[in-house]
Length: 250
Image: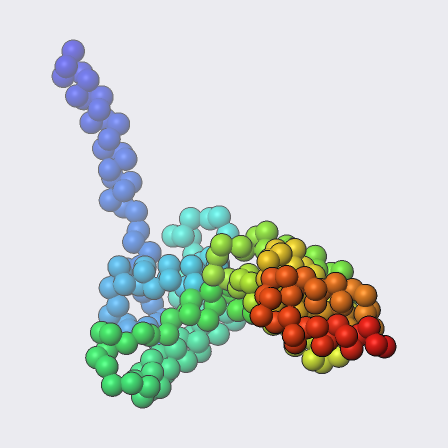
């Protein structure tokens, strides 16, 4: 009986082991390398590709010929048909030039201690590494205030806690201040209001909100925002009282 069990186990395992042995290492003997070293090891190439995928939030089919969800051994990795692969080569050369020619000029430390630029340094998990301010600008221009507010909520829901976008206290407040400085008071009020919802104890946010309301002629709302700012930062009271007095005098 024991011999029969052993035989059955072997009969089951042999095909599995044979399939594993025959499975192709897709990173071995790569073809058509134009930027990466031609003698790059399978392990190094695998780690490099994973770095691209994680750094840009993409999959193999972004640069290589193949269908999403299909086995990787069906991909034509040597093909240059995808335009994104050509762009990736340009980016690789750029990163190499930054690290080799420019970064060493910044300080006199050993290479092992020097911080090097990588794909993720700029891309932060995005194929198109826009800052949140860039996304808001685009939404304002194409779809208006309500769309921009909705887009911010969408980004925060999908990316909060990642390094793709900066959702910290001052990012949106500073953006709103810049909008107010450009005379875009409606947009500034919208963004400062959103930030106040997420950071109700942020003095700077309510200060910016006050300036934004003031610029749009909404004096009552501006005074309320300045008063809230004074509550959060009593040291700013003399400065803010002057702003409030000026609004009351109008």
